[in-house]
Length: 90
Image 1 (cartoon, helix red, strand yellow):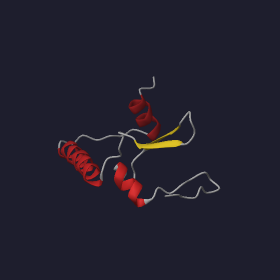
Image 2 (image 1 turned 45 degrees about the horizontal axis):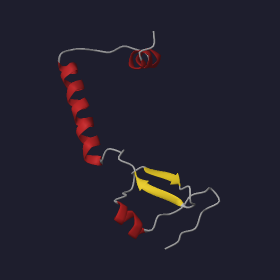
Image 3 (image 1 turned 90 degrees about the vertical axis):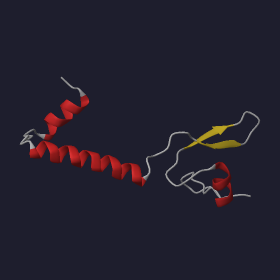
Image 4 (image 1 turned 180 degrees about the horizontal axis):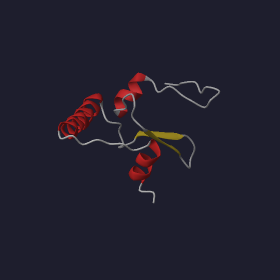
């Protein structure tokens, strides 16, 4: 099986290879040159969250914000203030 390298250095992994390696859209892959020549492409264990996990997280945040709103908690911070708070900048 072969594939063509684009001018950007990109390749398309054939479907049979993706399926055999368990590589899905959005997965990260590890690419290493072998000392004897050739390249090894492996599925990385690091995976992006699936749509269901993203929806669950979004729902959790929305419920928490609704609870704060119900309690009358308001936030009047600028974007810069939020970024300093989130990043831990002093």
